[in-house]
Image (cartoon, rainbow, N blue to C red; front, side):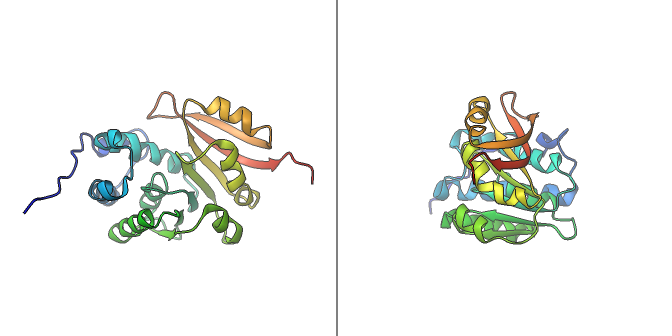
Length: 220
């Protein structure tokens, strides 16, 4: 019988050193997440194949920066969750925190099934919503502390999606790359932003963008 090969992972949990401290139980949950990404990768194309061998540094540690930036936030919304970076990592890091909840918004049915599998296997406080982002945000009324997104869309569109949540008190945390300057220039044509730019600890060209105000510049 032919066996399906599982890709080799060349790094490990040590990639989290200097970003966030994790308990043994949390590390084991993250290891389950990583193993399931490798198992589901062929059928769902969860991450870029060239990054899979360095999944801990490229995806897990990078994602953990969102939680590290807002350590008091317990209730999160993660937009376009995909393979769970950063939302599922955030949920796993919050697994031992009372009252924590991370809403993962992913319209792709296959990826939503993957997210539910990881949440079940890890016991992470994640709730998966297989809906379009616009539909979810328009009907979501629960209190939320933070909203995140990674490798999803340009800053202008992210602001449009996150604005209703930020207006209710959430802080937005978006992972951005080397094109952030151009994205910011475009976004500020439409939005007035209270924004702080943080240097990524895992990527010299990366940024974590913290936004506490998103107000449309269009006249009412």
